Amino acid sequence: MKKYDFIIAGGGMAGLSLAYHLTHSPLKDRSILIIDKEIKNKNDRTWCFWERGNGPFESILFRTWNTVDFFGTTLSGPLNIGDYQYKMLRGIDFYEYVQAHLAKFPNVERRQGTINRLKDTPDGAFLIVDDEPVMANYVFDSTYALNLTKPERHNLLQHFKGWVITTEKPCFDVNHPRIMDFRVAQEGDCRFLYVLPFDEKTAMVEYTIFNDHLLEAADYEAALRTYIATHLDAGAYQISETEFGVIPMSDEPAPENPAEHIVRIGTSGGYTKPSTGYTFQRTQRYLRELVDLLAATGRPERRKSWFTKPFKGWLDSVLLNVLQNNRHPADDIFTHLYQRNPPEDILRFLDEDTSFWEDIRIMNSVPIAPFIAGAIDVMRKKIF
Image 1 (cartoon, helix red, strand yellow):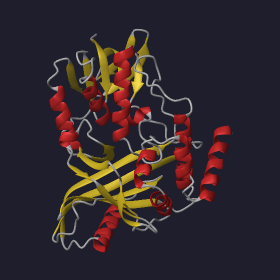
Image 2 (cartoon, one colour):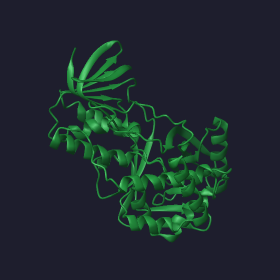
Image 3 (cartoon, helix red, strand yellow):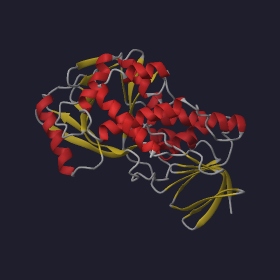
Image 4 (cartoon, one colour):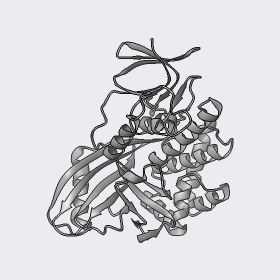
């Protein structure tokens, strides 16, 4: 039975990112096996995120913007995001770039297969992949499915459908993506549109919802068509690509280190921010921390603040509670946040880079009564 230094269970964004960061570290010569049941050769998703300066994937970014537009209840127009850039990365570009990089390392193996068993043992982590046993000093698992049904937790979904359209008329401002356009029927949920322009006649238009149930396919499409007809002077248009995705928004605990030789990464390890569904940038940050500690100490255990992380997690739970129980219209909540704070502070807040007092100031800018009710309900659930 072959034993590796590291096995990465799941070759999606989190797994490939971990392999990429390992090969840029002092651990680049260790034996690595990446296992995934699918071949990553399709443009199956798009990641958008904000960032200061240059990141590790700067050369393959599809688009970058210095300004973004917001349309809420009492605020509409461009947001000054300071020295942040809003960045768009296509899945296929990421897969091809990382896989080409990993191909330069003979110590990195790829295997298409299904993991039938994963178990911790005193000698390392043990896996069965399509009836073949393998072992590793550490397994990094992004395939573990969180339990999103516990009634004491807040479990919403961020689900979205997007079209890349080419229009008859030049109707897109290439310098101004729309990151949250709430000018759609809210239906008691949080519903908004992204518009990510490629050129004056081409853009991705994406309908996004935060709630606890998916829609019928026709409902997403009807909302997209209505938005295009109402808010874009497009004329006729053609759909060249379609994207659909579901991201959990949950405060279900997701231990990164459930066993001595098993580490969960990505959504499985709690890398998705519960209140927003943002994952890509947090995954890169957390994986770099993990690799640095593994190289320095031999242990892949990220250090966590005894106060800051639980407090920010509590804030996530309160926002989820407000959204889940429809305590206040979501479009008005996000409008308050961007209208009463410098937008770049909101981006730092969402990245969890703000201090305790900055968090208090930002939370004080939202409607107070529904958030007090949400906070009391969160405390009640935690106690009882």
